[in-house]
Length: 247
Image 1 (cartoon, rainbow, N blue to C red):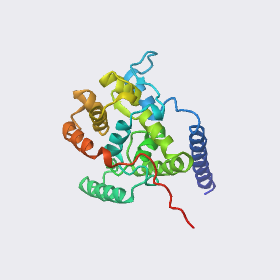
Image 2: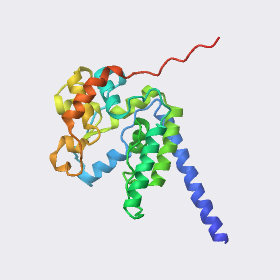
Image 3: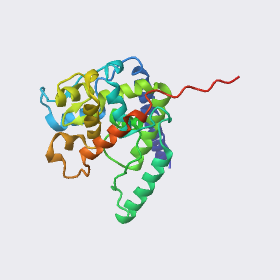
């Protein structure tokens, strides 16, 4: 049994080392902008392989140079109470777990049944920054751990800034700087309400929004989603609620 104990120690040591790496990386991002994400690197490899030149578009834009229209539209589309929660939305996750249980039962226990829904902006960011696109319960658990680190170590505004600059907006298009230029030829600061709603509606299926050949698996009607976003943009908050003063 000595070999088993040694193996378990190695696994535990590797797990702890990985968490330490996450802590150091997130700590650096408090003052340094990420140059890429795990998802971006995977997409670059998928599109270009070993080619030096690659049609990946990305351009960092500071938070205060991004239109409030876009910030509000993305919140409506992806996580309307982002500035109020602590990284997870328990009710949404419970619904997702129930849906997953149903899917697994229908799939007769197949281990590759994909997880569905329930992700906040912070959870999406955790996945994009560090993890693969593979969906299983171990990856979801690691995603939750990273989500906790992100919420603890970075401010909400910084998290949102990194998200808006790293999220996918089409094939090889990452971040609002590249997206606003690609679709409308304007800087992110100049996006109108209608343009912001269009871009935010793309986030659930950005490749499908960009190129029709990716729409076979997408079940989304972008114009309807754009109308919903426009109707609800004014009700979302762009900052955490102030703490009540105690006497």
